Image (cartoon, rainbow, N blue to C red; front, side):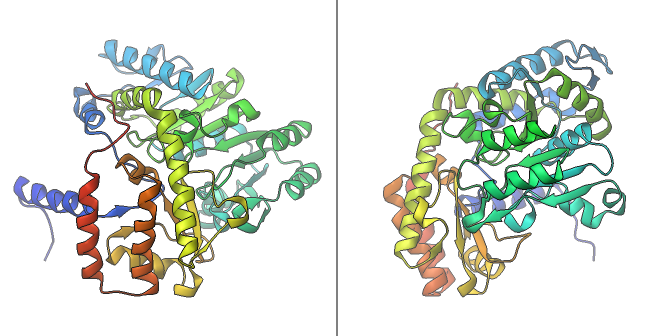
Length: 413
């Protein structure tokens, strides 16, 4: 029997189930965030069914008629993005961070050029490495090597700079989905410049922290370009951005984008603009609280006996922490145990199955502070160490989350 929707009522019922379930989950997925309902409303405009396709850096010529106000909405949103990320140029057409990254790589490399990136084993985003491994076309085009890492998922900067000098790559991609601390972007940018390499930064996870001014901006540290998402630590609608201070680079990117993205879902632009206005108002306080919560939660988990990475460095300076859960059967098993009790985290989906990733962006938006991190650590202890009955944990978790219905750092009309 084919399982299909037969009515609008059935769609509504399933959505209601989803909303109720997620509202009663403790969401610690670092790549997700709570969207202000005021911002969400902007996704419902007439733009949802319209095209804004264009070519050219400024988007002067539109492929479709009827873009009189679409162009103005896009231009003003671009100016907001450039302002908050301190960039001279931006492209908002990628519909996700991954597409933004692929477009940038294709724009700046030729077949067989050496690309060095953070690989999946080290919580890389899996931009080029998996494509080359799984798609024959890309394997014949891309030449990829891993950026060397050391303990606690941090770049071995000295070793990496030596590799840059020896191998002379065409492109270096910094940034990862497990970034605990700022990277040595300035030193790496200097080494890249010496060998004529482009340095781009995957800031998808830390874009909200950069916008809030609480994490270094790679563009200001010497990166040639940045690509990122708008829906991780940045609390906006799903989408992607490419940023640069180089007109030459952005002209190259512009030649590639139309072959990857034609309809770029312009209904998200007013919502993105509203999210930037929200970050302009609250980004600093929001970002600082995220980092404080991350550090506090890491310390509380450490006090419970969990193996939290980078203790000697204070655990983290970002919106996430990494915890080795090998003793609980690995990251996949541990994440599913937590999920059964409605505690959501991320397993090490591309690496050696050791660590789970725990993010604090959404719980910070829900209003949690440092004092609440002990309670969260208690729930982890109950599930992973004590292995309590999941229904008991779920019931207590629901009662606890009721306290956090007043979402913070949200702009109002």
